[in-house]
Length: 80
Image 1: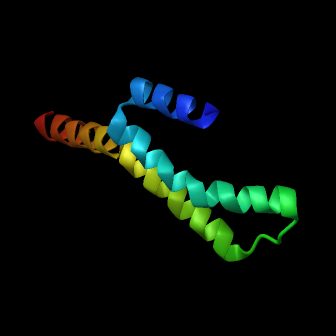
Image 2: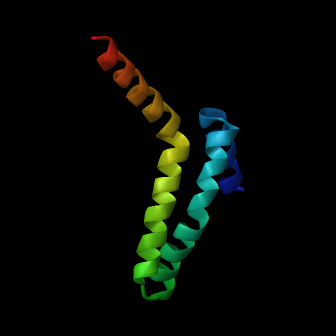
């Protein structure tokens, strides 16, 4: 019940498209919880997967703004 309440707050705050990208965190949280609770070993693949998930979240949430900023800087430099 609490998770659903948090989910709806996240959708209201960030929008459905952005909030849905946070589903990518499920595998990462599963690995972290199994390490914390069950004491499973973390492998190099786990860290690589975490890096890919982080990169995917960054690109899906900030990529458009970053590209727009880079594009505007490029256009401003060519005008000067």
